[in-house]
Length: 460
Image 1 (cartoon, helix red, strand yellow):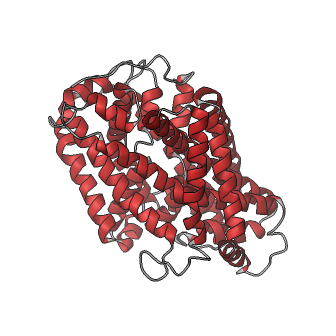
Image 2: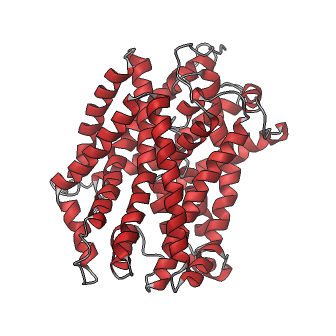
């Protein structure tokens, strides 16, 4: 088993803050600002949040340290890092190519949804919703957008081009510098929107539903269902298993332990997820909207709320700017992973790799756009499903959990890198150290929980 040394030409983050914000930006995305409030609402609120935080600590932090450890020790993208760390003759590095495939497939539909956020920001900014009065008006706006391939294609293309342009400027000058600005703007928007939500008439009821555990309400949903949903959300929120985080481990310094960095990333990720709930649920209770409205909550229910709210155009514009920043930080981070992988695999310079990746992702994203209109007859998951549903199923239910299980087994078993090597890398630097007595938990408990997630995802 060998361990490569850092290449002198390899880029690194300019600061620890840059690493934390970019890594958190990768984790923060649609899973936080759309899926988290939706799933929390559907699973009774406070009890779900309690279990979510518990599983984030039990599963999210450890698996994140493993992905970062492979990157920092291997000093490369997933395939190169595996090659540097695996035993001679083993094939762990094949998972690195699957990671690249996973990142590409994630962007094949994530760019479309990020484009939706940008489109709604523009709609509120330009007053599209001001003339709407009927309760189903927002539903019509969303349906019309999905039916229009040119509109969806335009905003998807803007998302791809802007993301690639940022990455073309380099790690420090592009990805790190611009993500810092977006993350700071994101946090500012969170504060403004949350404070405004606290002033609404139903703020107390909304916050109680979201933050105070009500076991009777959770029992109505089924405690087992609430627990499984919380476990799924705490796992998927960090986008682990496809090397999206691993690449940033390869760029980071060795001054701080990986557990410390993982805790900081999870804290920022959780801050945004909880804040999304603080923004959304007071509005729901103030305007008589069911908190379990489901996926339509963001694009149909909330726009109707904003149109009936004093200063609704301003608050709707700020909300979807917040949503745009949250989704776009993930786009930039995953693009960086794809571009770095292409640079390593094909020995291309950054600008050439950006052109190749930009054109490729643009073309590969078109099926998701067309799946809502021109190709609506293609329903990969059965009646009523779309291309996006099929792509999301492959990434969320297969590539993410199975990939995380592979990272975990590589780090804690003697057939892979091994627990001793992983622990030494994770505990290098100052900060929180992982104790050795957790080895059985990492070897048996966490893999079992991931298998439960995989099985539940396939059955569901």
